[in-house]
Structure formats: structure tokens, C-alpha cells
Length: 294
Ligand SMILES: NC(=O)c1ccc[n+]([C@@H]2O[C@H](COP(=O)([O-])OP(=O)(O)OC[C@H]3O[C@@H](n4cnc5c(N)ncnc54)[C@H](OP(=O)(O)O)[C@@H]3O)[C@@H](O)[C@H]2O)c1
Image (cartoon, rainbow, N blue to C red; front, top):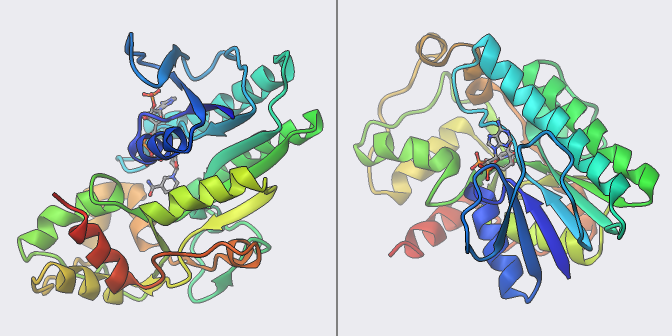
């Protein structure tokens, strides 16, 4: 299959490209910073102007990083890179001489907002807050490709556990130094997914293909206190230093919402569609990550 990806130079995309190429797919990457002679093929794309697309499937991951201080400018970049970026991809699909049959667009469990202990499935309504608004608008843009007869899946990605990026890479220095601790009271649910299962879910959605929202999380979400305990235990370190909510707000401003929001997300679709998770429990997922480290 010819597959075109955006955002493929990032934490998730790099792994996905390697997995797709390993399965014999021909991969092209739309990027703001092409490298001549790179393999896979890099094609210049500014993130806004509809690119030329000639592919059987498109996987759209691009977006301004969310983990930064949410100044007015940063919020605008986070929103515009997703809404306008996705709009330009759909415009490119409309103009493509050969229409891809599948679009898989990244989304996030941030769509559910802050929901306490509620079990959230793909049929739960969106929540409130900045990220929920961004994600709802982002998915709506992607769904417009359905009008072109294209199957559209939106991957509501949870906290991705990988040794070389994402949330874990940010937490590791403190935890390795024995300075980790729960956040606030530690009761907020964290819906995580091992990077290998996330890549597996993308491939599963591509092969079927699946349409509609898909919660890309493991079946074993954990509250923050448990997540903290298991992460520290997996590194054989104590986790004695809780971070008070006010300190987090001082450090990160409004972005601290991401760390404090409770999202108990269930991968109902993935389970119904017969996807087999390789990493269902947090202690095992963490063990497998450290075991795969050189
Ligand atoms: N990692 C997670 O835990 C997680 C959780 C939920 C959702 N997601 C979503 O999944 C997608 C991929 O995540 P990731 O962790 O792989 O992200 P990442 O490492 O930050 O990579 C995202 C890619 O998007 C492109 N990009 C960055 N800023 C951009 C901008 N302002 N305009 C246009 N393109 C821009 C970059 O590609 P180029 O430089 O090549 O153009 C970058 O490599 C993102 O949309 C993210 O929101 C991730």
C-alpha cells in the first residue's frame, strides 16, 4: 500500500513509519523540514497549504506540542495546527486524482475533559475545557473526508508510554533521582497505552479499515497514585514527594489541567474489533519498556 503520513518525524510517527515500512508498505512523509535523500521519502509541507497526495491511505499526526506553557500564542498554534492542518489535508484529499480509501487522524483522550471516575467509551460525549474544544474541532475537520467516500478513523490517543519520548521521558529524570511523587491527591485517572500497542492499533485500523472514533488506550487505566507507585517501583526508587496542585499550577499555568484532569478511558471499540493488547497492565508495560532499552 502507498501510505502518506504527516507528523511522522515525531515520537509516535517515527515508530509508526518503521512499522509500516517493515510490513512492506511504501511510505511518504509530509514534513515542514524535509531531509534530501532521506528514507522514507520526505515531502515539503508547511502544515497549512493542501499538499499533493497520491496514496491508498493517509495517516495524519501533525500538531503543535501540547506540553508547553499555554500562552495565548501557544494556544493559537495548538488549535490552528490541528484544525487548519486537518482542513488542508481534507482539501488535498478532495483534489487528489487517486482518492485514498482511508484517513486515520490522530486525536486525543483530552476530548473527554475532566471526568472523575466516569468510565469513558467512544460513545461518551466530549467534555469541557481548552483541549476538549481543540480535539472536538480537530475530529470534526477530519470527519469531513467522509463526504469524499473515505473511511475516517480518529485515534483518541491516551498517555503514550515509550522509553524515548512522550510523557514518560519528561517524568523519568525526577523518578530516576528518587524525587518522583503523586500529583495532588493522586486520584485522577491516567489512561495510558504502550507505544507498541498504539502502533498495533494504527495498523489494525488500517488493515480493516475501521471508521469512527477509537480510544487508543490500554484496558488497564490507573489512578495517578498507583501510576506513580508502579513507575517508581519499576525503577527501584522511592516516590516520596507529592507535588501539590498549586505548585503545578505555578509551574505550568493552565497547561497543568492536562496533568490534573481525570480520564478513565476504556478501549471499547478496540476490544469489540478483536484487537489483542500485548500490554494490559502497567507493571508489565513498564517492565517491557525498560527491558527493551539498550
Ligand atoms: N504522545 C502522546 O502521548 C499523545 C497523546 C495524545 C495525542 N497525541 C497526538 O498525536 C500526534 C502525534 O504525537 P507525538 O507525540 O508523536 O507528537 P510530536 O512528537 O510532538 O510530533 C508531532 C509532529 O507534528 C509536526 N508539528 C509540530 N508542530 C507543528 C505545527 N505547529 N504545525 C504543523 N506541524 C507541526 C512535527 O512534524 P514536522 O516537523 O515533520 O512537520 C512533529 O514531528 C499529535 O497530534 C499529538 O497531539 C499524542
